Length: 426
Image (cartoon, rainbow, N blue to C red; front, side, top):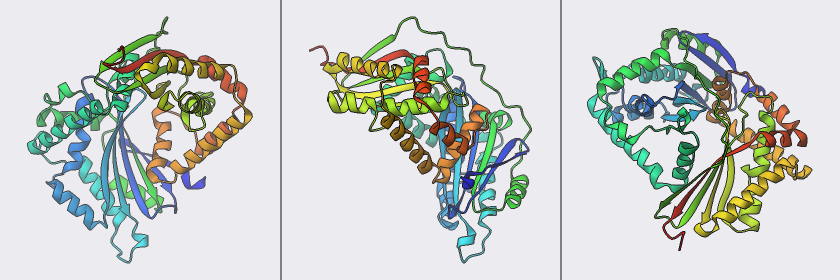
């Protein structure tokens, strides 16, 4: 696991994470900015990274910027947004060839830092306003991105489950913001938000590859420095326990029903029983050998798909399944039975060991890519903890049946959401 050893240095306004490894032929920069999810900022925040990656002061069009990336041996630049608990995370990722593997001695690590600095700190703006055409173009794309969630009923039903389940909580907000807010964004107020974000966000830079630690520190110090800050933390209040299950049925013109069930796990990343929760989810619905897949999909033939996943920083577990409209009651009943079986410890040692092995393989596959490795390491930033990958693996491998049933007892059913069709009652 030494290839994932992380060296963290506090620099001006952000933390630098260096992972020196010979595993990759490229060097990867991942810049992450984290702030509490808020209704007033979520849509601007969803737009901002796309405006930044579209062009810059030096590369004033998307074509010019992409041409320069091609010059850098086909470097890739892309942005992403995520919800991690009740935080909104913007990411800018740059992957560039490592000059050690090229005959050309061009200082690509330095050029990578210079380009990242250009994208982040020298945007395509005049005065206190982003370039109008760029903003309008990216607003159109953002509207399409938001609409695409509605068009994809699997994603839509998951979004709707969270909206119903987390009503009044920041986590109910969509990662891409709200369609109705996009037109309120101007080049001026977006630029104002850009300045605010770079002044207040918790910022982290990951540099992963066959690099020299001192050279990376020197380049980072030279090219990226910001105001010192104390990042804002979420003032998360404990969610009130539901006295009864929230059941929501929504009718649309769909042929296949989408049944999504939300549970509160009452466990988050960094808690001592988080590893047992991971194994619980694997046995319950995380994989193709899991109880949901076998019992709901295979044995009863009730679902086109049936699986569960965790939101590690919010303490949620979501079950997702696609079912015929007429099978709602039966499918819900079998899912409840699988949860009861987990609480009773009704699973074999073989299921336990198989699940641990699959999780371990999944983690190893994830850290096989620089981006995946960053994803794993960034959990610590979000949770304010320092769990190493070795610890993660060891703790998970040591999980016992008793710990899993104890975790199961903490899990509470919260919301059942069913997207059903007009023919359901016929």
